[in-house]
Image (tube, one colour):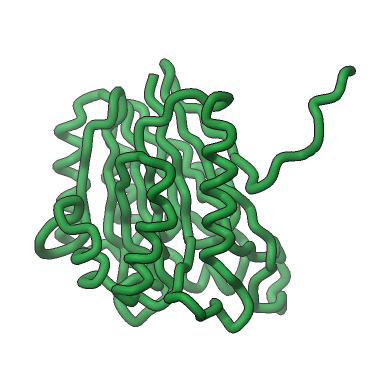
Length: 263
């Protein structure tokens, strides 16, 4: 049995700053880390921590240093992928020894039973994502090396339409290229992503794809063409993915409800 915790879209900024002049994202992440540690005996062993992009809101070296300090109490091996708010070189420097020394921030690791693959969808200076030819080739090679083992694929930009217009405008632009490779995998493949600050489950390439919530904000699920563009000040937790003869995913909320009460 293997368990991987996924936290996404933390949007950390240097001390004293707030995202959009409003969100204290560091406090939000600190609360989530505390919540996770308070229920470690309930959720069982966790093998690794996956951060699915937008670690930083401004791409600064100071924000990455602060992010590392905030997640340190989890004490977990940590694997990170880039989001559209990240900056590739400061992120590479902050996670030297974990991320590749040059090129796209792609990687693959065997975590227990799971082949964990991270792909770089960052197009610096733009909101939408794209997988370079180098990244697509990396993915194809990593899948081939996995054999028929369970694969957890992580990328920041969703390869599906979420229905929120302003987010679909900045999704993964070449998802068909990714689909062609993923659809050919004969084993179990679960794709996970971030970017849309909501947990949404979708089909992709004949497999399940799940987007993670954000600990600092959400986007209203508003499918109207003229729906407002903006965020909601709601902290929405994270996901825990477990492999035990099959994938299972559960959301961990940022706060505990009262109880349990007798039926």
